[in-house]
Structure formats: C-alpha cells, structure tokens
Length: 423
Image 1 (cartoon, rainbow, N blue to C red):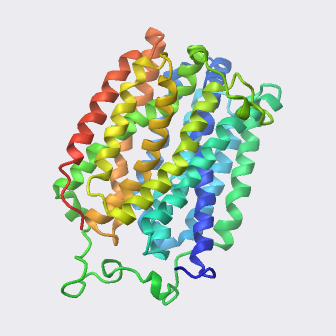
Image 2 (cartoon, helix red, strand yellow):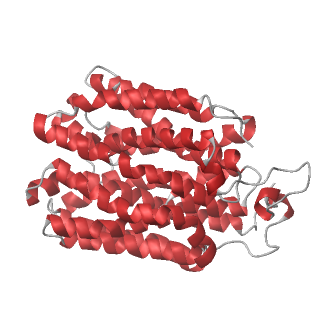
C-alpha cells in the first residue's frame, strides 16, 4: 500500500486539475462554433482551418515536451500552459476577423501540449511504479471531467450573457487560470533524489541506460524505436484514431443541431441542473462521452495492470470501428445511445492504453520523447474536421465522410493485433 502522506498523491491531484483544464480547452470552442460562424460570416470548414495553426505550435512542442519537462521542470511547463490557455480564451473573446482567429490559435496549442496527456503521464510515471496504469487512468479522467463540465457550462454561460459568446469565452479563460495556477506554482514537481519510497522505486530502465543482466531490457531511444515495425503500427493507429475522433468531437454538436437531435431531449435529471435546457441534447451528448469515459479510463488502467492484456489496444480499436459503423444510422431508435456508450469507453480507454503500450513496447526512459513524436500524426489527421466541414459546406451533409472513418479504424484494429509482445 502507498503511504497516505506520500507527496506523489498531491502531484497526482495537481495533474488531475491540469487535465480538467485540458478538457475545457479542447471542447469549449466546439460549443460556440455555429454561433461564431454565423456572427462572423464564416463556413464550418473555415472554422476548422485553425486546426493547422493549432498544430503548428502543437507539432513543434509535442516532440520536445519530454525534454522540456526534464530541462525546465514540471512547474515551469504547467504554469506556462495555464497562462497560455487563459490568454487564448481572452483573445478569442475579442477577435473580430478570421485572421485574428488564425493568429490566436497557436497559443492554444501551447496550452494544450503543456496541459496534455504526455506531461501528465510522464510526471505521474516518475512518482508511481506499482499500479502505474491505474494511476495514469485516474489522472487522465480529469480531461473527461473538464470536457463534461464545459460542454454544458459553456452553453449555460452563453445563456447567462444573453446569448453572447464573447463574455462567455472570457469567463472560461479566467476559470482555467484560477484552476491550475495554485497547483503548478506550488504543488507539482519532479521527485528529488531519494524522495521516491521503496514501494515506488523506479524500474531499472528509467534509472540506468544499461541494467544488470536478467533485469528489464534497456529503453529504446527515438531513433531506435523508429526502426521497428511496432513504431509504424502505432503511427498508423494514432492517425486512424485521430481522423475519427477529431471528426466526431469537432462536429457532433453541429451534426445533432442540424438534425434537431433526431427528436431526443436531455433527460429530466440533467435538465434540472441550473443553466441546462431540455433542448441542449447536442451539448449533453458530448458531456456523456466524457462522463462515460471516466469509468472507461479507470477500468482500462485497472485491467492493464492486473491482467496485462497483450492486445488490449487492438480490441479497443475494434470497439471504435463499431462506433464509426453507427454514424450512418444515428437516427434509428437507440443508435445514438449506443454510439455515445461506445465512444465514451473507446476514446477514454485509448488515452490510457496508448501510453501504456508505448512504455511496454519501447521502455519508460524515453517515453515522453517517443510519445510526443508519434503525435505528429495530428498534422495529417487535422484534415479530418476541415474536410468534413468542407463536405458539409458543399453538400449540406456529413454522410460522405462516414465510410473513411470506418475503414481506417477497422484497418488499424487489425494491424494492432500484429504488434509484437511488450517489453
């Protein structure tokens, strides 16, 4: 058992707060997309073009985030991220043109990378060894909590400010800074020499480049990992995942608003929450993805720790493929609820299983660097929400984009079954 006084628990709590901020940052703008494009005269594809501006900063920082954590320390990285998110949303609240939107968005990338899964997974991995998968799952639940809250909070603020999105965005920015700054300034840090107790001793591959005979094999560096079949299987899997995830995550609210929610309304239990209306089913749907994702992440972490499922990630992609197969039939009875359940579990489990797979495949020592480099797939993946928006602007429907989502997730699932046994 871990000691209750162990400082790692405070670090874990701070990382959860950072993940809540991440959930706010990733989902808030999707709530306002249809309102912003209507007020400023843009198309939905225009709104998604900023994804590449986001990735310009994301792509530069992601491969370096492990190095920055080592060089600058967790405190500096996370404080910078919190301030970047606050400034981004304050600037969004004041933007008046598409040029402003493009210039502001790279700052959002700085905040997302600094608050993201890579720093959180890396920091808590340094504090915990036993039940590491479970701890990472608990920490990453924070982004689900944040996104579940912000999808309904953003709509509530929109109503509170007389259906004005500008003051609502400004308030969200203030909340993000206030939530994380106390933790990043005074709580979160890397362990000092000798601080990790015996029950949390780091494995040999993290403490030494060449472990003693019979112990864990040495971790692979990025160049060595890139020369393996496993690396490229994971590249394709991540690309497929983000093509599907980004499309659904960025457009599901708009898709449901267009279809008038297929006649669904928010259940009475949730509609009783102040600021929530029965008409908020699109926002409720995104919140449900995140709420269901909470037990999904915890279960994924627990199962991978307890049973060491060799193909856990592959089976999770089978689940995602099943979710994508439901896209054309969301108007049928019960389909939307099954879609919500599958994606809630599948998206959440992927965020736990992917870093665990990377660590077990290539070792822990260079995990941050390898994981960050793999995330470069977001550059081509961000064609997904833009192209889906372009299809809608031209045809008035998202339907032609459904088939590529199914094909990619199914092929990725198949390829992951050929991933070699972990280290």
